[in-house]
Image 1: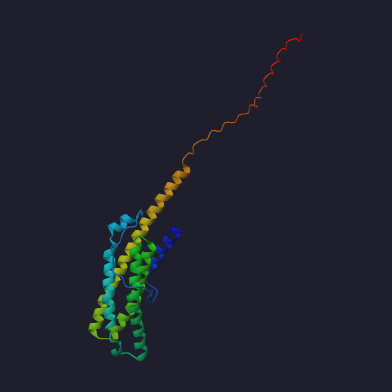
Image 2 (image 1 turned 45 degrees about the vertical axis):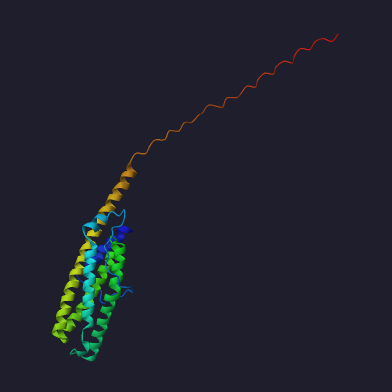
Length: 229
């Protein structure tokens, strides 16, 4: 089952690298400050997490999320040169992005801090960043077409940083999956070695001799009696 999960994740990563499902994922949660990622005890991937510190990536994600959230909040979509329907769609997209940045991203960061070597936790954050990038891109394009120049410039910087961060997460998942495959191969080789090792021979002794019967002791003769005069 673990092998199947790894294969599915790698396939999904290769698909989402260039294309992601539209719409940002909203997961309720509270904002948490990034903490230093602690390697899981006895986890063979702990060496990887120490060599590739997760705390730095998470700090960059949170800083980027805070700036993007503020930039989206400052948008004056009501002033855009666009019809009412387009303005409503842009406003809904902006609100969806802000919910994701305020709730989903901090919650996924917290989950990853708890399990820094978990492929599932890493992939969930990457998938959300990828979906967020796809939705954010449409808002940036609309801002460039219908909004003020300074607002577009801020959002353009935000989307560029988000693109960089999602690629960092994709690379991390790829390395984690490779480490996971190597550990799985090592364990399989160990099991195969144990299975082919010669088993100790157990010697069973069978006694076919019939049981010897015990001889009853001979009865002692009664003592001789003296004649009566």
